[in-house]
Image 1 (cartoon, rainbow, N blue to C red):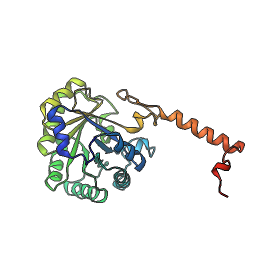
Image 2: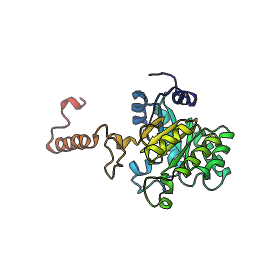
Image 3: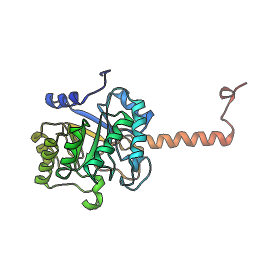
Image 4: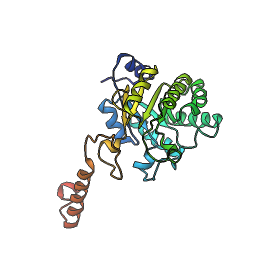
Length: 264
């Protein structure tokens, strides 16, 4: 495990030599510390925080202020992983100037390495404008949750020619990497081989250059729904409930606190 911070150049080198890239979402200081110590390559401060932490029905209500708050917390807990922060809904779609202002604020106030925004051809000019002023951008195509209403729900995206065109557009615009979400594995494989930047899959099969999962899905901490592409590596929810129930019972019956937990 490297002690020095992971860089964008190193992420590109991973693709070049065929080394897979690991990415997990993170939203706060304690989990950022755990992610950092685990050796994960990249932490995404995702706008999914709105769903799995704040309890919103989707990502649309999340604000720039909320992303900055969570981004700062993650940066305080992280010393090594490369941190990317999502630009939330309507923080970059209004105009390129507004996108530069909002992305600049996110970078300046959090100290993160890069921002992520959703969209292919339609966002290429915005990506290029951000990269031109020194803001690294991770692009995101396929199922783009901020456009969930337009897409008709959370559905697999199968329009191969559009997806390939989107991938080419964001690559040409200067994105350093590309998240591909909910796309058939064969199409994701073709996209991965067609671009020279790393692809990070989520529900896009095994041939992407890397993978990303939502932390709370991976650890069994979110039970409202679980996408079929998620592998649950632990089921911590029931363990936490069990611990809290034990605490509750010991408070009720007077067995906590004991002398050991008291001052004299």
